[in-house]
Image (cartoon, rainbow, N blue to C red):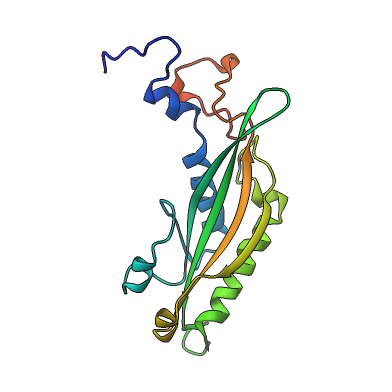
Amino acid sequence: MSDYEPAPGTLSLAELLACSRVAYTRDQVVAALAARFPEVQVKAHPGKLDMADVLKEGTFTAPSIHIAVARLKNEERTSGAQDLTLHFRAYVVAENRQIGGAAGLTYKADEIGYALMVGVLDALEREEVARWGCRDVSFPEDAQGEPLFTMKTFERGAVYYVVTWRQTLLREGVVLPHLGGPFAAQRPWVQP
């Protein structure tokens, strides 16, 4: 246990972590999409996709979806409450692949990539999925998909796409005092 006592008006790292829902919400997106697409590897990604990683073989497995929060923006409501808008990216990785076992068909990487993008966009439109099991999270806005790959990766049979959207965490950073208990145990944004 630390002897650190924060000065009045400051927050400890434990308090900041207890108030932040960013990583938790990203992880909930990962869990929801992994459950929705069991044949696809869905993982958290720390941020922006680096093209050097894309060009290096073996960095990403296909088919996969990598979920990142690429940007955060404070939004103040007229009431004075602070919301936090998260700009999500779902990096889709696909390669030429046979689907359906030995008797299955071989699909091109771009066909699989488009299908996965459509699947993510569809999930973002579904009320029962797109709140990710959280409360005080807005419905997704401005969802769209686009290619991200280079001709070099395409020639190797791999494609990269990105689906972007934004969602707002309402009252981010607010610890609700009526819940009581230590900061680390407070997760008021999880639906019961």
